[in-house]
Amino acid sequence: MTEVLFYHLQDMTVENVLPPLLEKSIERGWRVVVQSTSEERAEALDAHLWTYREDSFLPHATWRVTDAEEQPILLAVEDGNPNRANIRFLVDNALLPADSELYDRVVLLFNGDDAEALAAARRSWSDCKARGFDVTYWQADERGRWQRRD
Image 1 (tube, rainbow, N blue to C red):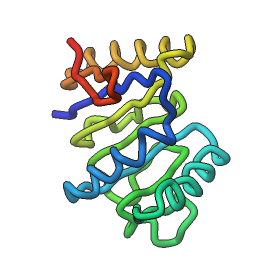
Image 2: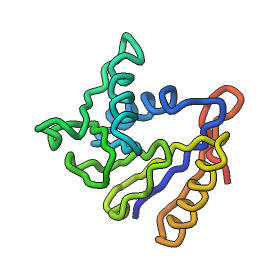
Image 3: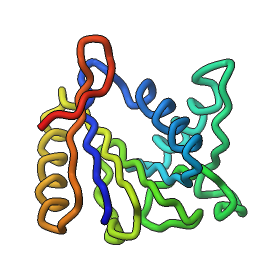
Image 4: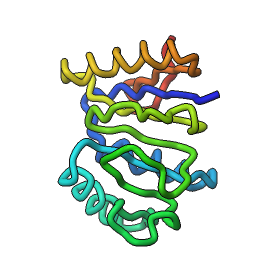
């Protein structure tokens, strides 16, 4: 069964939250797709992942590379799973892919300070529940550590 995690970002950015989550995914041996809503945004995330920390390396590429199927982390703007990922991150209000049930995990990062993003997350939550996915909600505590909320 697909597990869907909703990460409620408040006073945080995708640029700060995404890299550590990707690092944990790679440590677990997972293959990843990160889907945003525009080519410009995917390219900006690509540049950020190369430079977000001097002592880190996240092997990744964009959907444009010819060896997409070989990439452990692939940045994309459309549905599809060219690298056979088992986890998909959705940022910038990217919609749940039609084939969500094929992933072990889908992670939605949404800006809780943005009314449109909050409404989109609520719609996705309802959709996931209706589809029978195992859904959890996560929010950072005052120290910035993620806590599961019920």
